[in-house]
Length: 390
Image (tube, rainbow, N blue to C red; front, side, top):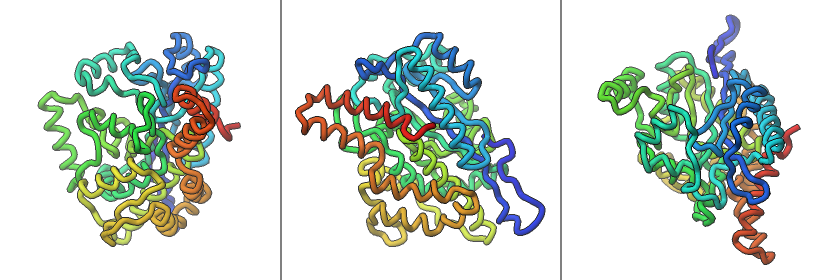
């Protein structure tokens, strides 16, 4: 992630020269291609991944999961290079072990009860501490870091960018199924994750001091070891000088991931520019932002969110056009205009969740049984995970 988060050149308008570094984490499922079920790989699989990808690849809570993290990226193009390479290498290694790589936030039919946790001290302790709350964590997400060196500015931007978290979620949705059932929402992942403590939209904080005092109370009481056990939808990273957005589902299509990365980077740049002019995005209560979070979770890009200024529901398509309008200049400055404009493509053809439901309904309409249709969805996800990657 970002060692030097905000770089300022010595000439010209300092705010015109902000370059916000990036880091992206993606979590994948490993699949048995014959059954379409999740699979627990042999020890040699992870050793091979580690040999090829080094410290950028890590275990996750369940054995059937694997996570990659990019190094510090200067821009979205840099992130594209690292994410493409990681998906390509992981997929290649998976095939050598008769497995497939799948990018989605939930599996269409696998039961969480059949999963085995990773045998590492960290995960063993989490399982002991969180009990049933963590056993259902057969879910994957996308985390995006944007570098901000100043801790106070990090909190200030966090307060304001909370407003846009439902928008990011809607674009990323990829979890319409749970244990073989359509759940009637585009992101069931959050319904599972919200069973954990210290999740959701954080309240606005007056300062970095208030944030540190709050963390201090919990660590002094011994209920958490450090702030890494705070699993909000957005948080200051514990290990890096970054602001980490954690609300997003795991995007199946890499272009969708990169579009959301671009959106987030542009939002942070916009908010810092506003601050340089003594302007702030209005700070809304977590209750209101949480309602938009639910609407995004329920309907994704096919629905509407509340425009708090108007006090009414507005279609996501219209809201996205508004965002493009005030972010385009920042996307041009950051070199990610095409990735930002890809949000329109996500809306037009649907997020991964929309496409999964479409594949399922088409299969059942063609006479497939429920089990056959669900396997077809898995096959679709495996193919799309590597779509467009060279």
